Amino acid sequence: DAKTTQPPSMDCAEGRAANLPCNHSTISGNEYVYWYRQIHSQGPQYIIHGLKNNETNEMASLIITEDRKSSTLILPHATLRDTAVYYCIVRGGYNFNKFYFGSGTKLNVKP
Amino acid sequence: SAVISQKPSRDICQRGTSLTIQCQVDSQVTMMFWYRQQPGQSLTLIATANQGSEATYESGFVIDKFPISRPNLTFSTLTVSNMSPEDSSIYLCSAATGTGMTEAFFGQGTRLTVV
Image 1 (cartoon, each protein chain N blue to C red):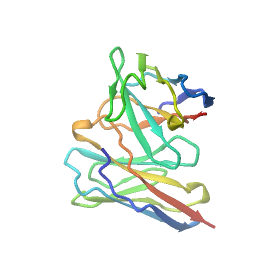
Image 2: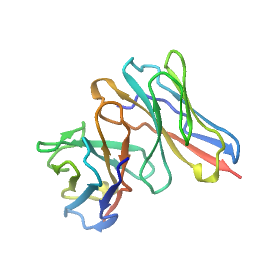
Image 3: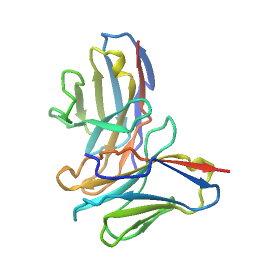
Image 4: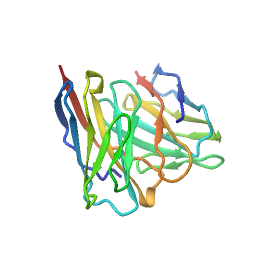
């Protein structure tokens, strides 16, 4: 089941970087870190995932600590449309096909 | 990426009845999943829909209540049986392509209200 810890909510000013932390201290060597977000009344949207190296795509950057026990999702220039619940998910190992969602972080981007 | 369509998008049902939700993917996928999201809560995995065999249910979910079919690599159904108001939730279909560490995609969900 969910093996991550995230703050329940965060605020960010529009145009500034949003840094969303996630703790996954029990992660094992073959487990990946995934990030999804859910905008109100929509299905979850994939953002990014990684194993141990930092990753960047057009949406965000994922920074994973060297010991892999925590990670940070960075939205470089948050907009009002980035207001959503962000979920950090550890996937792999025995249940490598499945995605178990934790409680997530509600990011409020404010003008 | 895969585009997932769910039908119906919402419904209001009488208690004691059943509703079947359809999930159609625009390409063949290896894995399909069904989730429930109760009001104000996170997503809870109900089961993995297996093509040609019985679905694999998570703890707390049983086949008699949530029968699932997956006749091919692009389609699955979830039935919510003998509904009660506690079944009022959003039900979401998800699919993953390929094997290994690939992302999953989600439908927009079916909003079910049981009265």
